[in-house]
Length: 358
Ligand code: PLP
Image 1 (cartoon, rainbow, N blue to C red):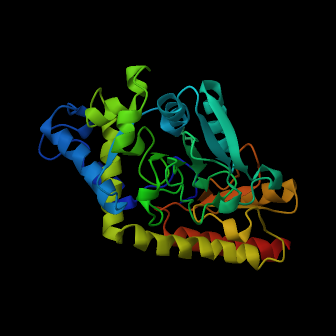
Image 2: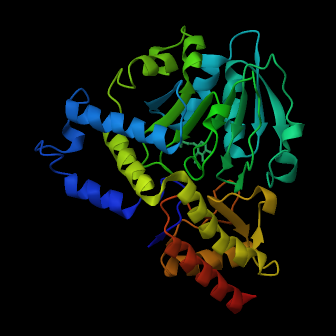
């Protein structure tokens, strides 16, 4: 099948094959990786290699820690304010879609927050201009969502917030292109789109923030605890982390983030070209300047035609093309592991559907 699921999403075939080959006997242990103690040398090697590969592939500077957590990106919506939104301070949130609204709503329950900029008025078809973002030196942190999975928009350039910590939810575009990690104080990403399977959330955090984080919260919600214990304070999601390691090995074989970026641009370009050349038959949701390479969102003239499109697509082996239940329409998620051939097949299918129904 051509898997365009928004997450959990496609994984590289070679990583899955490696996992299959090792499933019953990992590295001569006579056990599956799932059966290893998280305190064993064999598991720790996997864990540390995954961290090392993330540091290498994202060019993470010295002074940052890579953590593995559970609870998805959604738990980060609470952990960020619990750790960094101290009484008397306010955090700014840039609203660019459903997930940033959720992050904002969660923080609102825990402290004082404000909307630093919002793209809601245009139904989240663009990203606010950097100059529009409101915050000042007192701001506890500024939170952004780098890629808006549901609306199909992405930041093309990140703000320089200097003394104000910049925090980003990068769940749906981490490792899809090179970027400057040093602009950020904290980055989090659920693994199940671009890094591996569901079950693990990657957090990249500047070490000095670990010191500043609130200590009067439950142990498992403290970044500092994960930092101090190399994310082995309690039992981590070992199998998910193992799969992340396999996926990162694949990313390295592909040539890293820069090579993936070229590849991702070509893949998304195949589909955006059809949208742009269809005389409005396919209506792209995102403004061209804010387009995501990961989630390509579009509508057709009527819900009836969209239904026909989705049914016909399913008949041709395409999976996951329906838009998120909150907005409808269609969405093709072309994450790192989605092959070029899948995007080419979707392009051909969209062209033939256009010829038949335009
Ligand atoms: N943030 C973004 C940008 C997402 O795309 C998603 C899920 O699709 C989430 C957060 C929520 O992630 P999780 O299901 O891991 O909590």
